[in-house]
Length: 236
Image (cartoon, rainbow, N blue to C red; front, side, top):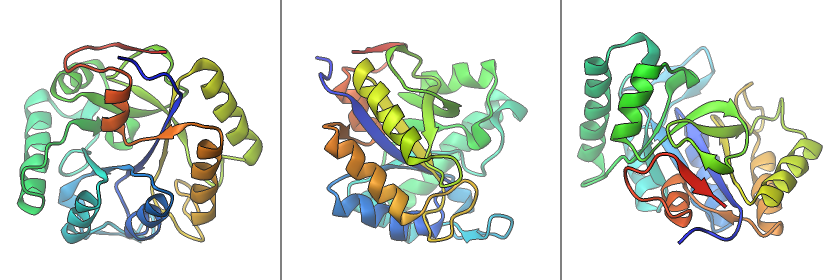
């Protein structure tokens, strides 16, 4: 049975510590859970270029225990269009096995392309392995959607204005679609690919005020009537 109301999902890539400390805390306070795409080989890594530290494995377990979804972002975060299928399979399996050492029995059923980069071969492999694959191409998921390349709206302070937010929420309601936001860090002075706590909170509240269900990717898929192996799926 397909969902009868528009959906919103909040997702975080790479997962800097601030996405856990600030991002997850804000979602939980508003009764929402998100999807956090983890490349476990980078856990605890200081990303000096972006100026953040990636969450450690204990924080991953805390997210999992608190009801957030953990998604696959490969193990070492390579561009999937630059490695072959065997290497890609090893990356995903190693990520799963590493995360199972922390979160016993965890199943990684949804994927996010590192750097948003992909090509046909990796996409075909990944959409067979996972229920969904999320990219960085902008748009609303509505009508017949490609679960191998879910569209998104960047939740970035540098690009998302209040007018743009209201517009995309309105269009999602009109199309009865599925809107997926994504960000990286969640800090008072965010990077070019991050958001402030105020923007995250305001976005969740705006979606809730508009009567939109806020669900992690896995739960949203169930809400639209997804059955494993069916790609594409219709959202209406």
